[in-house]
Image 1 (tube, rainbow, N blue to C red):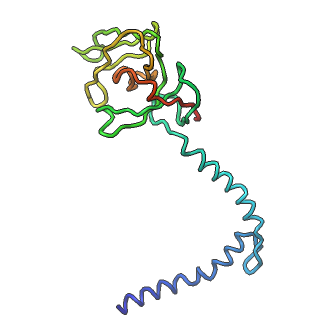
Image 2: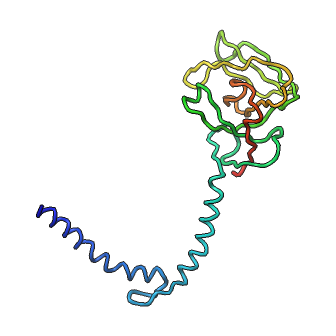
Image 3: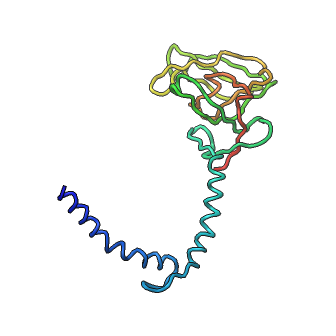
Length: 201
């Protein structure tokens, strides 16, 4: 017990010189010309006039900003944007799929084929994997992407088996990346589950 008391007392005595200098350092930080001189808080007020508005703006803006972690999307940060979803817009939604793991994830894609447009899928033998098939997806004749039979680490991928005019309320979402995980694999997404986004960075 005595040793513990002595160790605590030694620690306090070791801190005492620093604590004695603390008021003087605070005065210098507040604009005093030197130790022992009165504080001049003008410098502090100038700093606060800059820091506080920046901190307030960050507190308001940052919760509304979402980071894009996918290399298949040409954006690093997006935020919600008003208005109806148009072709080519960034859209965010919650994806639940075995390949993404047990928990749902928020993903950002492009709205690439809209209601009323014709989505055509053509199946061909896979170039990269024998005895496998690739799906080529076209929107009004324009190639959107090609599905791959296998993903990272050899995980088998099932591609969407559907062609036709996209019905009301549904959208094909994707990217231009050859390995993007999008509607090629999980199908059309209800527009009601999509949030229109705009690029910040």
